Image (cartoon, rainbow, N blue to C red):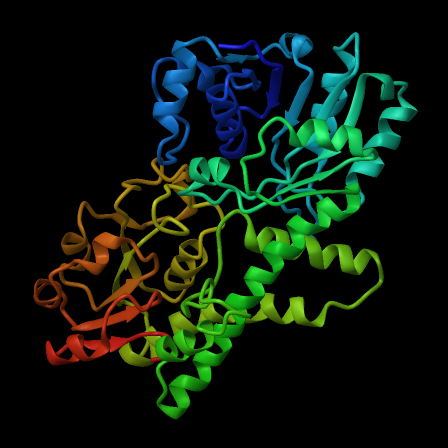
Length: 437
């Protein structure tokens, strides 16, 4: 195999970092994944992955075995890398602002331990203007000669992150010169994939605006679902009719309890904060966030209305992950909804195909105090006053609904993901409450 450029990945144990490291190693680059968590590195070396992502474990093992993927806790090991990807987290602060402190710290640490210049490529989602501020930050510390900053936002979806790396929808690179941008794009540019070489600010804003648009699309269809319930329409048919217009397309037009997870809500709030700092209004984005928050309350109100209150009621919840095919509960819609149920006096039993305990969901024991964890959907439903579906796992679509009815003390299903046909359940004598149907 032809020897290729060595690349470094800071935050190499995170969801984006580990996919980036393993996939670049598969392409033949020596990938040096740097992370300060030595315990997790040892776990990976023993075969234990920090999270589940289809196809990633096999890729990590293969590239570790051939020596192209290595892990380290020493930043000095990145010295040989010509390009270094920054994949650290940018969590939301209480104000909605993205906390970029890890990005700044990572870049400064990398620069201080180099004797020559590296291209430092920011994959982390950062507000528009961050790269320019970092360049000034490095200049002030006499580190500009050791780190040239590039923006290359990631567009990986959890549950299909490896596939998205191999078949990206587009590659966006923001850099102060076309030569620098082309060098980064040249690492991996599959044939036929659009490549956009642009400025720092454009690249940064493309990521935020993309996620904000998807979030707004979900809130839009959820608002139409409210009217459907009032006039007797079916949001699933309405959504299909809307999505057949090629200018709109059917993606992200499924009504339900709204968007959640570690990206859409966080990035929408970050973009709103950027508007505030620019002293501009973002009425459409504010409405998208407000509609999403209302959907979570609305699903609880449906339960309250059907049961005549929630105090003393026993509720089974199916689904903890923010979407199927992941074990990620970060900012999942399930968490605030379950907390609402608990605060209203209900007892809650949960089931998720991949998350069997608080520890399995990387939750603290006191995150959901008093919640019981069931081994199966049927065990969760046994003797309960209602079944609440929060994640559209394929396993839930295939349940024997007659058996579920026999388990429930009250034959009530409130479906936050519209995974069932209402007519079928009503024929079984189940009180079925969907969203917009």
